[in-house]
Length: 315
Image: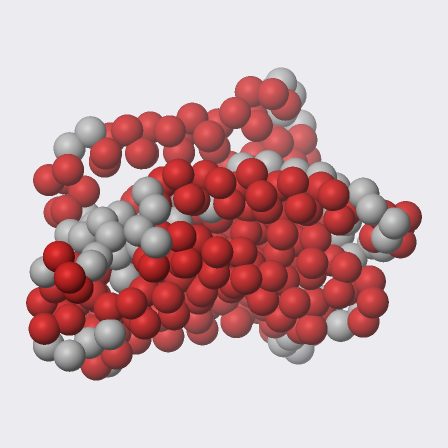
């Protein structure tokens, strides 16, 4: 593999990993509050079709990403109502969101607006930094050649890490996820914090879906996430619920998802079905290794009350 192929593969991994990163960061914040939301795939799909439709109507990337994020937040709000207020099983509720999000996105993407949506080729986004920086050998395309959304994702990683470990609200969030009864006794609103960060998680997934449709793929098609939401859920575990590790893990899986492109430009022929299978096999193995031992999950950073409903009356 020559230097040009290596640079292209890294750039492709960063771009392909960015939607997964947004979804993973959102899910980290949700799970830090003690709420497990397995509906990331559905939220990415509804965010994708909503963001793409907004892109068709406005031609503005930022408005489209906002629309996608809000759509994801609305869907996650349903999960919040079921899981937090009604104390429905969080796994069942999350899986239901996948079905609802997939169905709604398929219906909308194939409705009366379908010809308009399907003929749209995404939003063209220019690199943020000057051409002189982008043209630097090797490091230029990798570090300085990206669109503003990629750099925004880096800022969000830094902000999320600072928020979780260096601020009082971040400490409150972690306290709610670790011991909601103690947090409640200390005067924190367990329900309010869990609602807020479930919505934040949905917003992140929706933004990821919109960016995937508008920029990475530049088109809308039913089921375009192709399991990216499930990968994001697994990456939360792989990253140990830490934002900066989520950045690395997302780019690794971005590289796996673009491996076919990398091998193609390198002149290596590998069956596409085999390449498409690799990210999911790795995801499956990660979940098995961590989930097989609850103590291992705790050591890598899982909130102690993850997935457990809280009732003040039962305290």
